[in-house]
Length: 161
Image 1 (tube, rainbow, N blue to C red):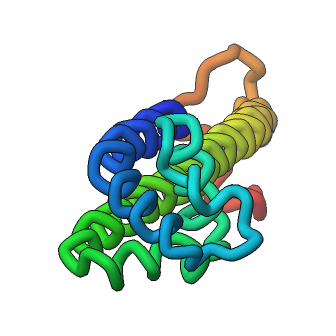
Image 2: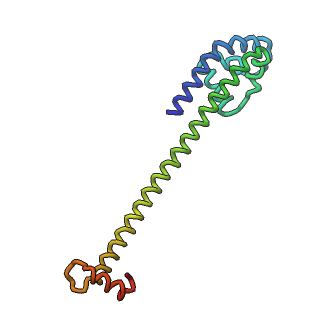
Image 3: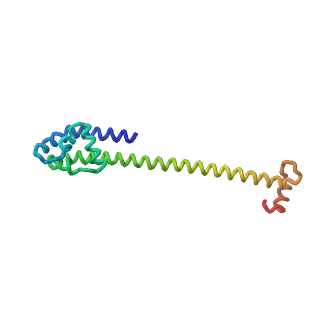
């Protein structure tokens, strides 16, 4: 779900970029600033192209100087939008990674808790068997019940008790 939300967030920013950055980018392209860069002029021409540009720049961290910096130099107020894109997308990505880490840690803890419960269950069964054998030894008349006298005698004579 977090990946879908991240893609939606980038798409929303791409819509803003098409409206705000594309006209500025066309002015820069008309000056010949981009030279032989085929993609630079159309970096924000459509939502799809803007998505690709943001994925390249924000997620991969590549080519900020190719398109973004000339746009910021041409219209300094756009730096606020670029900064907002960077912060929101990176925070979204970091939250996605953190969610995965926390989920894995939570699952590991649950598995560890189950393992501990199983170990305690095995220990309980073993202790129950030992106690049963001890009581059988203390039951001198083999009646199936322990009397107070049998317990007191076993306490004095049985080293395991």
